[in-house]
Image (cartoon, rainbow over all chains, first blue to last red; front, side, top):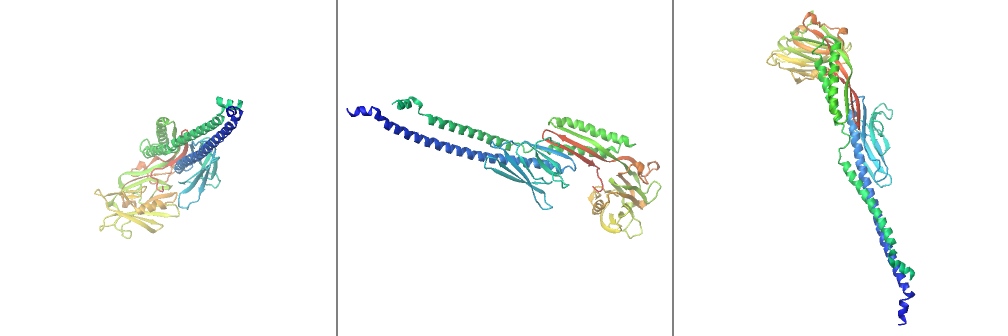
Length: 170
Length: 320
């Protein structure tokens, strides 16, 4: 009977506090683990989706360049404008497109590579296309684009030039 | 006691609450990303690019129409240049308006118009006759300093000079000369042994190539200078001729008495500035008003494509 008042009194809080602390720690570890795992999952998904979106974007730009190329080959001195609707952002971030004219043997069609990289995500996509007319070197921010056919580098030969969207006939 | 009692009253789940909220945010972000992925997949399966096929089709249809018009416009109403130009311009303009109605359905604006036409002369001989000029001269200038298109000729084998170049019979020849270079195409009957009609090309007196064909049942052979065919078959000599032609040349018939048949060609020199032995009034070969070539402006505009080009048309041009 002497002990009974002690357990039902203030002394019992010791084990309760201990139990609470342990519960708190375990819960924190569990939730922390979930958050870290969830965050990692989101990061992975973000990179993967950025990768997919970049692939689609470069393919669409390649397709637009091929369309422009087809028109450029059917005209001597004509004006060409082909608009390509690319997304402004991939996986929530801006991205950069780099069009590079690759050297090719004299009797072969021209070659160009398109590389896209997302800002804030670990993703890069590239594609190489063959065109009948050369493509001008260009680095542009992703978004709606226009392909024109003009002499961009002043060498007297016209190239397919990719620009941020403006008037089609410019 | 007070603290313990407070936790027991349901306030102990702050950590769960914060954790659950954070996880909820993660799930929402994940859902948004997956949505983006689905949207990307959607875009990837759409038509690639704006599709320029329709533009190329329009341009080809327009130039095809103008090409046919330019071939046929010289047949009727060819009594002066104004009539020809009006007919041709009207044809192109009406076609452009009609076709634009169809392209409007695709939310596009398509036009074709005539930028300029080049006046020329059609020279020919319709009835079967020897290839002399109106004064029966056997050597005469068909057209001076010009380019030619739609040059066709039908000759009767029996009328041609016999045997080869070294035989006694002179051979009928068509000469293309620009003052310096001289391309001569001899057309003759290769003799009783093979009985072929032979065409030989000489470049400044040096033989380049030849080809021959036997005449059909009607004893006639057609020579198409534009398509480089002899009786419908490919002919090296004619191909060499078209590839060696200078930008401008004078067409001369030689030994016109050693060929009979008909011919026609269109040259790029207006009839009043042309030196030719063909004169309609005297019978035999004639010279008539004709359009030689045309330049068209083709425009196609939609929300995603702008295309404008000039197309030059000179159907069946010799050095094309």
